[in-house]
Length: 380
Image 1 (cartoon, rainbow, N blue to C red):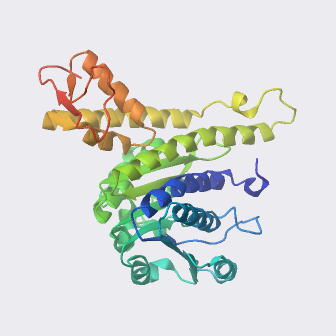
Image 2 (cartoon, rainbow, N blue to C red; image 1 turned 135 degrees about the vertical axis):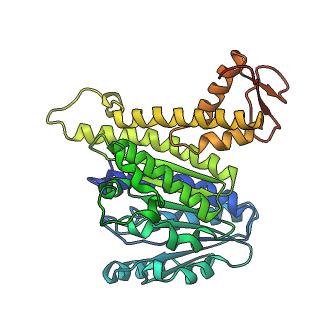
Image 3 (tube, helix red, strand yellow; image 1 turned 45 degrees about the vertical axis):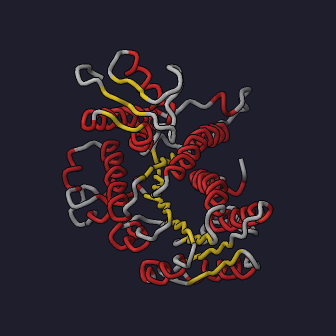
């Protein structure tokens, strides 16, 4: 395993997901927009062990912006990129400012600010709302209070734009039962009813409610949540919450979620292997056994996605496959393969039919006018 991430493997997974999303997103978006504005609201650096900051979110992101600018230019696209890197604390900011000065080039502008980003939201909004510009705002606080939705609303409302927020669920659920801690800007006004749930149910419900708040306050049609496991415990450390107004954004992010799931297996296996006192004869991926917490999460979220899908079909009778896709894939651990399997099973028992296909065995696909029609007299 990369020594830069030893004992902070969850950060490696976060950075893995960030890079895997930004690489295709900047090229797809940059092909249609003149400008791309990236903001890291809590940049740090924190615990960086690399001289070039390649193990930090801002180092990775700026590298991706440079790579994408060159790629787009080679494809006759004149897209300009800029990055605003924000850090509140003085010592890490001095390092961040030096990085920004060295990283700025003719076609990739990098700016650093010594701010508490919550006190400078109007300035951030002005930074990203230049003409013909698309914004991507990353909020990765060390705690959970900077992720409170009320204060973030102007950032969430930026159009066109996407947001990625690190929600520290492992911290939040500790305070659900604490009367002195106010969580309405994280969990909504009715969060007290979560106290009757067990720990895992509270965590899952916290993610659902936070996503609902992001969806409402940012007017996002799509909000997805990617779980990141603790490297050495059968527990989820945090979720990456992604808000987008583009089905293509969901498609790319779900691909990242699947890749991160696979990377998690490798990272946890290597961590387990490194803790063994004797040499193992098998590779880490063979020794790894998937954690039960993730299994339980996946089972519940798939069940929830199925229920939401059937409720949608029951309410409307016939629904574009595109809308079924959007409904189901916003649930963590749910992929298009799951959706197609559910619809195939329902079709085989006569609960639905799929209109618009050229042949009976064609898989339903977005952007092809495929329609899922429920048979009212049949059960799912």
